[in-house]
Image (cartoon, rainbow, N blue to C red; front, side):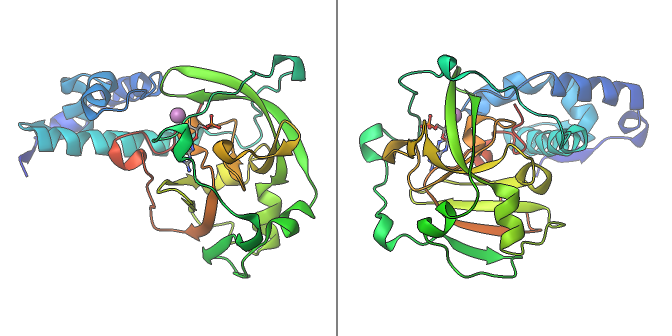
Length: 263
Ligand SMILES: Nc1nc2c(c(=O)[nH]1)N[C@H]1C(S)=C(S)[C@@H](COP(=O)(O)O)O[C@H]1N2
Ligand SMILES: [Mo]
């Protein structure tokens, strides 16, 4: 493994650990590659201190980075304020056209057919019957104009409408004490979020964009829209939702992006 435990005296330097943790929080992990992720996260010395490891090869460095990133998840989870709202914007500030992004080009966006679409539910949910779009449209709808921030270096303001995700989770009898909600998409994308964010009042199961049904490339038939999280945490083309206590990871998260991904 290449990881040696350091003497505990080094691992117990609380002020230094706090200093590193503060540094970690003030930075965003914004680059797609593991190399950049490594460079931007923190100094090797601080890393060794935080993880209690000696860093002798790439594997142990990566292992330690994952440890730091998961630590960062916990800290972000502790400081997440479920009542704090992301700023709303006026309609006049909506970015037109709204940028497209995915791990493929726009012409490869999945084509989901409404007639046979069913939203699948699994895990810690009492009523696992699949949902049709019409049933979701029949629930009470809200909309909001908020900023989407992508780690690739752009942000844009958009207007999404749909069902408050907390309403949906309550309706299906999800275990609201569970740790995670996971999403599987019609492409090969997947991601997962913490339950406090799932229950945040601005977290929407979005069915519309700018008053129209969500266009194909922006996530038809539905996406999860969270103004409190970075773009990659907002899954488009949701096919299945599950509630679990087992860490589910995500498409980019499993390649080194920070899991909590707060914005
Ligand atoms: N299914 C799916 N969801 C996804 C992605 C993807 O590739 N597939 N990319 C994510 C990223 S990185 C961003 S920035 C946003 C882009 O959403 P947009 O096309 O509406 O701008 O979708 C997120 N959700
Ligand atoms: Mo993104």
